[in-house]
Length: 241
Ligand code: SF4
Image (cartoon, rainbow, N blue to C red; front, side, top):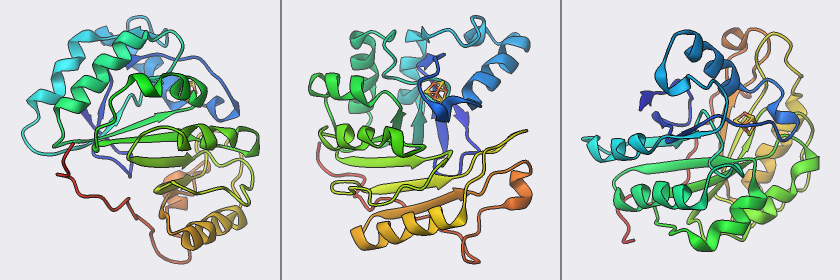
């Protein structure tokens, strides 16, 4: 478990590590860059760098947290990667089911495998399920997410690489928008962001603007129309399971 600098969460928990690229949003994968660094630093968990690995020893970590947390699951991987066995995914879900005091945010680009497996998983109220959608080509991930039994469903539109007009936001609770950062980021236009914000307003979806990104993401900041937008889905933490 580690404190996270990601604006929409508190902590990260990585029961799996490693991944392979699936779509254009993966081009400058942060998890891959970090895995390289952590391997170079000799961190045991990353000895195989970005190869997909499961870490059963990490499953006990959430039981040790003293107060309620908001946790991004697998910031260094994709839980629905084909090389992660269903049995291990079920174990990860069991840990989340056993710890309703924490919110677990699971994000995937593998919406097809999520859809394939979703009926074999127990969706307690504290599991927020999201898909990444970076451009119009992968919009179908939203339809697959919609079919799952996750109580809270969200979209991460980051890095946003194209306009995303006329999204079907039925059953979607939360949208995060962000631009790409790094040495050679692909641009995000303000019109695209404003259009998504308007769609959220109309559909009554919580809107979180993460960052503009760019070469100097700190300087570019996270103000939109002169203010920040940090909305979160409105849910009761202690609902019955
Ligand atoms: S799916 Fe996520 S973790 Fe995997 S390569 Fe793409 S951006 Fe990286």
